[in-house]
Image (cartoon, rainbow, N blue to C red; front, side, top):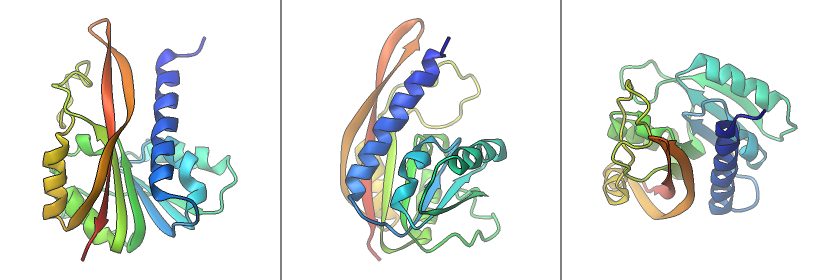
Length: 203
């Protein structure tokens, strides 16, 4: 019997990938990085958009799973993985940039210093490069209520996140709700809106 959580994640992945694809538009989009790629589900859906694609995460096991998933599909892009922590300013040089597109799906809320992460993304992008972040609206801790070890953000206030992006050298082009992820919290179903915010490096 299929795990209902697997089906929930599959629907969410496909919805987020469709939204990112819609924002980017048709055609080739050069070089891209998926930050916090995890097992690579979103990049499997988007790899055909890019000439080169790097999946970045701090979890080597997840990246190995992602590499296996991507190897099973025919893509035009040259795809690889990289175990890199972009939120750590003391980390050694990674040599990933410059790139044309960076996207991140449900990863930023796991990063305590989002300002450091977004500053690193700014430097990773070429001038005029695009950033797309899909993440949770502020949720009061409900989404990770089952995780006693969770030390990230309980979603984001979009206005506050936009202000951080401005401080890091981005122009915010827009944001919208792209999906509502419904999961059980305390035995009751609860919907958690997921937004997509699009920004451009301006300098």
